[in-house]
Amino acid sequence: MHILHVALGGCLKAPPVEYGLSEDTGGHIAYILGAATRQAQRGARVDIVTRAFDTFGPHYMTAREAFAPNGHIIRLRTQTPTYLTKAALWDEVPALTAALRDHLRKGPRPDVIHAHFADAAEVALAVGRSFDIPVVYTPHSLALDKVGGGVERRRIEAERRAIRTAAAIIVSSRDEVERQITAYDPNAMVRARRISPGVTLLPEGDAKDARALLAGGLTDMDRPMVLAIARPVAKKNLIALVRAFACDAALRDRANLVILAGQHATAEPAARRLVEDLRQAGAGMEEIFALPPAHTSHHVAGLYRLAAETRGVFVNPALFEPFGLTLLEAAQAGLPVVATRHGGPSAILRDLDHGHLIDPQDPADIARACRALIGDAAAWDRASAKARAGVGRYDWDRYALESLTLYRSLRTARPAPLRRMMAEGAA
Image (cartoon, rainbow, N blue to C red):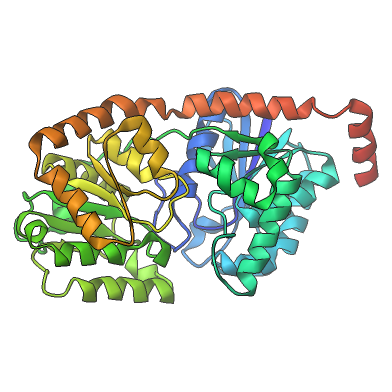
């Protein structure tokens, strides 16, 4: 089977990925690479189509890059050579559609196209109609609940088209199936399939890497670490965590706060403002609050491990989190979590029971949950043990098996004469 994933936003490359290099380089890239790698290991030919740009050096202009045996990243070029944010990508959809059509005319053509986010779905659905290729859609996050201008309305309409017309929809959580998808189209539930993603093993890196990253900042690195890792965007609600820490004397007296919020040197203006807001909210806490301006994947792995070594907690205070892969990364390290009750984390914590859910708009609730784990050795031990014991149920091999089964069913869903007529009409 030949699978074509389409993901246009962010800085997508073979591992190690430079997470945080741009505002849109986040967890969806870990999802796509995890899924595609395991699908390729199961014998499928897997290509990931993304967009070429020269803003962050020549690597992201490479036309073809291997990420696994039988797996390649294909970068499409248009007349716009610079990196574009997710909001700015919409104007490139026609050019990217034409570029992907040209690529597929040269063959071979995939058996299925799997689109990630609505902009990719616009491209995938148009190309799928041209060549009679079924399209699977994974939203990752949906904009219907947001209040925005023309760009958000455009995104919502694209999401609605994708949900209504994709041959199948793969999501990660029950909330996505039962509430989010049906808000766009109640009839789409029959085509929506919940397939839990896996968790990619943490890269090499230990607490020494984290200590090196934090050197010269925190006075005592052996205090329990309250750790957050998220893109510097408002919906991740990192400011609430800083305020929770600043307003709770018991937490300040006992713990350190460490927040990884992207790569500051390459941050877009809105992200830079948010990082500055975090610094200002943490004013006066310099000896117990670290906001590293840059990091590698080894630093990330090291921070999870140092946070566990110091018997700290991982915190996801997002206003809404579609799934929550970072909660699984923390679980690998045996690190208990404090997470928003809105979205996917509620399902993860039901499965693993390795922490507490909180109201992300209540800083006092965030602080109480952190103290409940840091201040209770028995509770911390139970949560840590459950994290390690339960994280294995989130498995990319299971995801690959279930997704490949779904893809194959789509190829046989339409009668062969209809497929031939559609293909001839597109020629």
